[in-house]
Image (cartoon, rainbow, N blue to C red; front, side, top):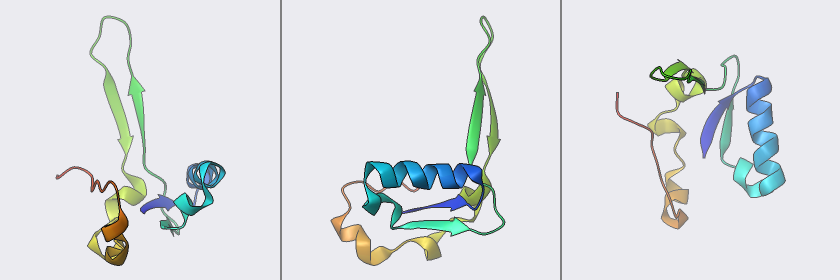
Length: 83
């Protein structure tokens, strides 16, 4: 269960999930017109690492996107980080 954009990164994520186990992509939402979330970590030697983050479709994933009827069989449920 998750949400990706309808961009090249979202398609790559769905392809990866389907190759591992086709059922993993079943609960994914593809958000039209939204980018997928990603983070670039810049870690130069001797300097604290920096993060460039695009929240993308994660910003619009909310309680209405959760398939509550499927949670009973979930082994793990992680709902991001509070703002």
